[in-house]
Length: 152
Image 1 (tube, helix red, strand yellow):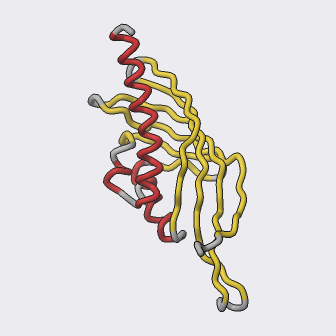
Image 2 (cartoon, helix red, strand yellow):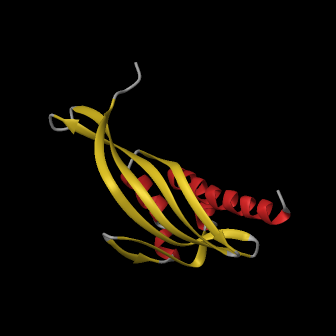
């Protein structure tokens, strides 16, 4: 493999890691790590939500961890196309959002997981040697709920 091929492979690897870092920072509520993933002019949007800039997306981990007991975002398939200092990508993710519900006026609590099958349509840019998310369009392909069975 020549230097150009190796550079392209390393760029693709670094971009793929962005989605893994995104998932883990979101699940842990790690605002420092979360903030390092995005360009200052980032836009995150979805069919059901208005576009959000950097200041608004910095609230996402806090909001999620206030709403749910725990989240787990599992990044699966990724297809990245690099073109110099810019790139595009499509990323698949299954996201689990665990929360508590109850029967009989709260006497019998149980956990549920609100699950999302997500596809991210991304744009990336290399800024000062680091790949960052510039645009993330979030498409929810399906949602479903599972009951959590506690360990025995």
